[in-house]
Image 1 (cartoon, rainbow, N blue to C red):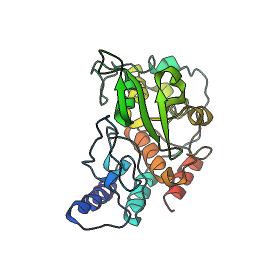
Image 2 (cartoon, rainbow, N blue to C red):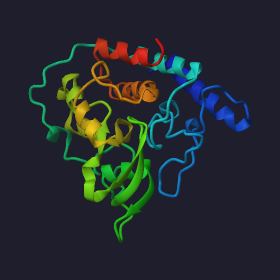
Image 3 (tube, rainbow, N blue to C red):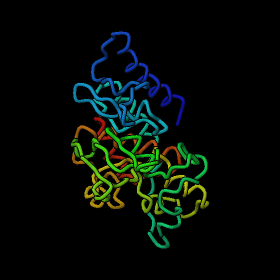
Image 4 (cartoon, rainbow, N blue to C red):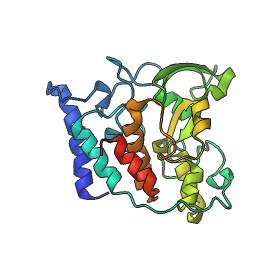
Length: 260
């Protein structure tokens, strides 16, 4: 990311933080603040219908959820980030296998947040985004029930482990997409990082995750229109971090979601 883009993102974060001082910046919500509070269950506290954290103030993906980007200033910063992505055509899927990105939800991927903490990636994410979280007896890792606000639908999901597939973990940049855009030439370690990096992962409705499959933004966007710019920003953040290009149609669609 260029210094210009970094300045734009820092300015957006600073503008939201000004709410604490009563500046009242239009379009910012309490959940946009870098120091968003957590509920007792481990998810984000909500107020006035706000959920999650703006991706502009959560560049490493460690804070809960995905809040809408609404202000003009934040959308300018979002377009600045997206505009810097390289583009190329989508390559063949030949040779792709999920196992080439490591086994699912490994805790041993190096170089990503929450790894090596004794809890697998899926449960880390359920704890990060869930509210009213309860754990299996004797465990502080295995989540057995929670309420999840699904940013893709804008609805709450009352989830229990007995029906585990009702909540699935979406790879914002799908692994197959990454494979076709250059990850086929990466080292195994780098592929494992992408597959388990919390920046690239969101707990969402299982049926929606299945319908998305390995689509890019030009062919799939969250049904919740309010979150589409945030989704585009998160997709861009992952692509920028891993130096992945996106297709030209995907880039155009991402810019459109943020007002281009």
